[in-house]
Image (cartoon, rainbow, N blue to C red):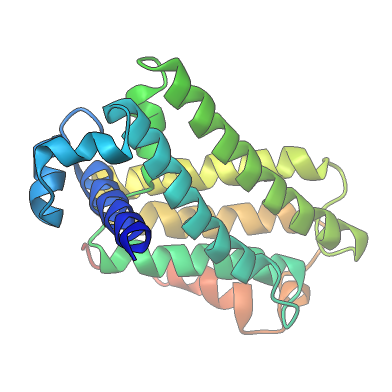
Length: 225
């Protein structure tokens, strides 16, 4: 029972720390804030983590596990074609960011910008996460290339790197502009590019899917959030 309680408290600390670091970053997230939010005495922190850096490393791992499940939920959904799955991932992310008023962004992206030049341990961990995500997208893209839905002129890993870098950049811009317009522009352009010049949009998803996502952008300015 004590072990279960200890693990439960650790998860609570990770969840609270994840929330603070996503909103405020590593430097501006105080350990006392996290401990107060969970109701844990300050001296107990070191029963779970060696240091603030170790805390951040485990937060990254915790975030990655949860987020990877979401990614796989989209990319392995066999009810949809590979390009539709990629689009569904983007639209799900768009909805979540819009609900959060474009304030949080991606924890991995945020910490990469803040800490990659400050902590080699954090930089390596963050890069590992990005590589893992890139490989998930590359696998889905390769499947789309095999069935002729995604442009074969570029390697699946190259396209996945472009997709991930572009999406993370769009998420950052959504945060800085407090608008989902950068996400809509990304969705419109990246799927047009990946489909290739020789593929009609109607072939990607018969009338409703990605074409509908494009209409979000083409319909005119969206309300600011």
